[in-house]
Length: 486
Ligand SMILES: Cc1cc2nc3c(=O)[nH]c(=O)nc-3n(C[C@H](O)[C@H](O)[C@H](O)COP(=O)(O)OP(=O)(O)OC[C@H]3O[C@@H](n4cnc5c(N)ncnc54)[C@H](O)[C@@H]3O)c2cc1C
Image 1: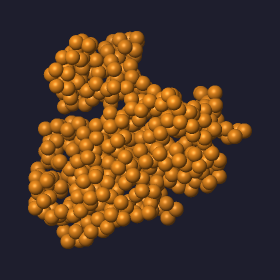
Image 2: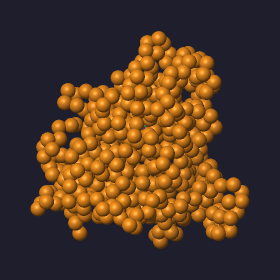
Image 3: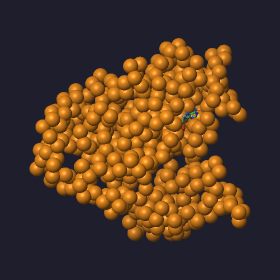
Image 4: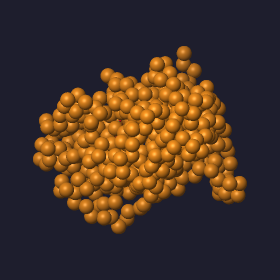
C-alpha cells in the first residue's frame, strides 16, 4: 500500500505531528528505529514547558515555544496527561545577573510571554523558601510548567493510533529511494511507500535528509549530552517552581525542578559527544549537577538520589560552527518535493511540540497534501487508570469491577496488576519491563524495581503468551531469566 504520509521518528515531534494529522482522512505511518516510542531526546530531558523568554525574538523557537506553552493545558487535558503550571524562576546573584534578567524580561515580553515580571528577594524567599540566601531577585514566569515528556509522547501516539495512524517500531530507516513521485523508505528488510515524507529523526535528522537526497540541507546536527539526577519524593518539596540560574553561552544551565510525579530533578549538563547514542552518566557530569543544584538550593539532599540518566540534544550547528544562534529547522526541502524537515529540534522542543505538530500539518498542506476532516475522529485516548490517585471509595469500586486492581505489584509507586495488564493491552502496548515502567511507573520507585520486577515478568509472559525466559528489560538481548543456562 502507498501511504499518504510517512513520518520518520516517534519522539515528541513525530508523535505530535502524527496526532495532528490523525484528524484527517489520510493514511499515515510512523517509522521508529527503537522498540518503543519516545526513546530519543524525548525520553530524557528536563520535562519543562518553558514560558518562551529564552529564544531570540523573531525565531521559530520563540514563536512555537510561546504557542506550545499556551496550548499545553488543553493538549494535556485532552490526552489525560498530568501537567502542572508551576511557573519558573531565573535567579540572579549579582548586579550583572540583574541586568541579564532585564534582558530576558524584555525579550520575553517581545516574544509574547504572559505575566512575566522580576521579583525581589523578599517575594522570592516567600514563594521559594529553600532558595539560596545569595539569590537577590528572579525573573518569574507563571506560565511555565512541567509535564512527563515520555508520557505525553506515548499519549499522543496512542491517540494517533486509535485514529488509524500505523506505528512500526524496530524500523531503522537506512535507505530512501525516490521513484515516480513516491518515496520508498526501507530498513533493509521491509519497504514503505509514501507520497509525503516527514523527517522527525532527532539527532539523526541530518542523516535522514541526506538519505532522502536533500543536497541543499547544509545543517549538521551534533549530540549534546545532558546528565541528570532524580531524587526521591522525600525531596519533592525543596522546589515549588522550576529554578534556573542565569543562562550562559552554553545554555540554560543546571536547574532544580519538581516533577509531575512529586520527585525532584537536578540537571542537566551540556557536553558535545561524538557518539549520538552515548547516554552514559559520568562522575564529572554528576558532580557538576550537584554543584549547580546547590548553587540554587544549598540544602538539597543529593544522597536521596533514585536514579541518574542522560539525554542527547539534537543541536543544529550553523555554517559558522555556532550553536547558540541556531533555530529549529522546520521547512519543506528546497530540492526534494514533498519532503518536510522537522530537524534539529533541541530545547524547547518539548514545550513547543503541540505547536510544531500543528505547524507541520500547515506546511504539508502548503506543499499540496489535501486535508479533509474525518467523521470518525476520536479526541483523547482510552481511559487510563491511576490507582494511586484514587480515593478509597473509587478504589473499592474499581476492585469490584476487576479484582486485578486489588493486587499491588509495585509497592513504591502503588501500581496494581490491573494497571500493568492495561499497559500491555493498550494501543502500542508494553512488551518489556521498561515499557511497563514508562506506562505505569511500576519500577520507578526507590527500591529500583527490586520487588516488582519478578511479578511484572510473570504478568508480561502470561499476557503475551510467551515463556518468562523471553521477557526482556528493554528489548534486544536484555533477557532477565536465562532458564538455568550458565
Ligand atoms: C538534556 C536535555 C534537556 C532538555 N530539556 C528540555 C526541556 O526541559 N523542555 C523542552 O521543551 N525541551 C527540552 N529538551 C529538548 C527536547 O527533549 C527535544 O527538543 C525533543 O525531545 C525532540 O524531540 P524529537 O522528536 O525531535 O527527537 P527525539 O525525541 O530524539 O526523537 C527522534 C526519534 O527518531 C528516531 N530515529 C532516528 N533515526 C531514525 C531512523 N533512521 N529510522 C527510524 N527512526 C529514527 C529515534 O529513535 C527517535 O525516537 C531537552 C533535551 C535534552 C536532551
